[in-house]
Length: 168
Image (tube, rainbow, N blue to C red):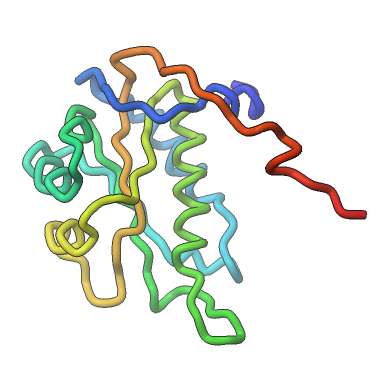
């Protein structure tokens, strides 16, 4: 799929078919995630793709919407604080780097004909505990991954002049 078509067609999907995700699609998505730019190319993240039903249910319990568990995979983007570059003021940009990688995941999944839904409104401590993350690592975002059960709902966007400006 052409890049701008992917960007225009990608939607947040909240209903999934149980069909498995092809391994070839997962490999291409992994490649796209590995291409995400990060500060000083440190790549302070890892992406977990959880297929195990019990683990998906445990991770999904940290989120208020049960539909997340309807997908055959739940993706969890993990930030690795100790590996992240820090601004001159000292604050880490681990969340920025992980978010860029997560967006590569979302767009690559759309290019594969798969649905996702970026989720940040979850109980982070609970999910991190379920995953047994070591000190210095924490989840940044979740997303179901799979084939959409229904077509995406229509949406609206602000006019470009409200979100985009060129200053000369």
